[in-house]
Length: 91
Length: 127
Image 1 (cartoon, rainbow over the protein chains, first blue to last red):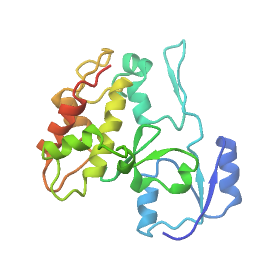
Image 2: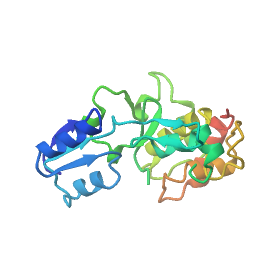
Image 3: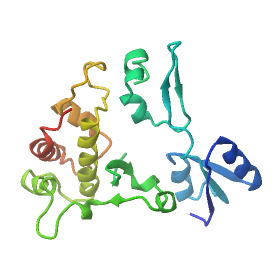
Image 4: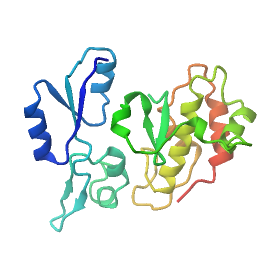
């Protein structure tokens, strides 16, 4: 794995800003693909923008829909009561 | 594939996908952190007694994963084999155990011993 810059974004706007400011930056979430490929030096980003601090919300709304934040995990979704009762397939 | 499961704040993660810098300031527990100065963790002891390993390569991950899994059950996280998603009560049945541990592979095939070790130690885990 080659050396890289690591930056942590505080919100979506910040993430975009950081990625724009660093050529060749890649977003880092759970790392399931990217970290694997970095370990094999197939991916060699100069900069990682960690987006895991972005919204993890799972908010049930009055119209029956549920707002899911970009960083809500599959596990959190599976456990959430609104998802389990309103959208069981997603759980 | 969870060959190398560790615990962060009691939650199981794949350490192979975790860059150390991402976890700055967060408490990480590896298998070495489970025992006290004088005694093994009950689950470690159970792995010995129930023949839960041969080469031992997957064992640290199995044990950490099992502890994370028991926490998930206590938190009420369902699995694909949970019979009723609207049911609050979950318990660690044989099917639930095997499904929830299915990410931890064992090339020596010690699965029966692993399952027994987990069952006898954490089998009463439930919401």
